[in-house]
Length: 139
Image (cartoon, rainbow, N blue to C red; front, side, top):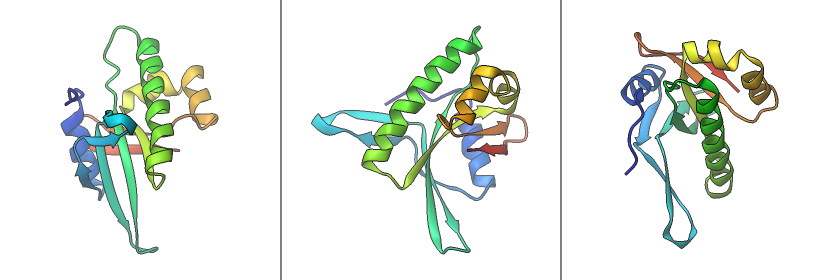
């Protein structure tokens, strides 16, 4: 079982406050040849207007190392791998990267982060660490 990210509990609480139900903690992605990958969370939310269920998977990243660029490289590599595998094995589940709001400001408003968002390489949401709420969804 993988280690939980520093902000795991905060992200769970923020998703619940936003109307999501945590369905998997962690979300196990079963691969061929009995290999497994673990994404931090799986969640669902009822879309009332469509009477449908929206499914997401969430990879939480804290960006707490001395190098934000190194953290970004690792997060993007993990995100791309999980996203491609989810698109094959469970295409109705959308992957999001969850990062603290200050990380959006320091990393995703800079050129490298902006390119990833503008070119639709990643989807993310940000959260407020103290209020345990979701601040912004960026797709």
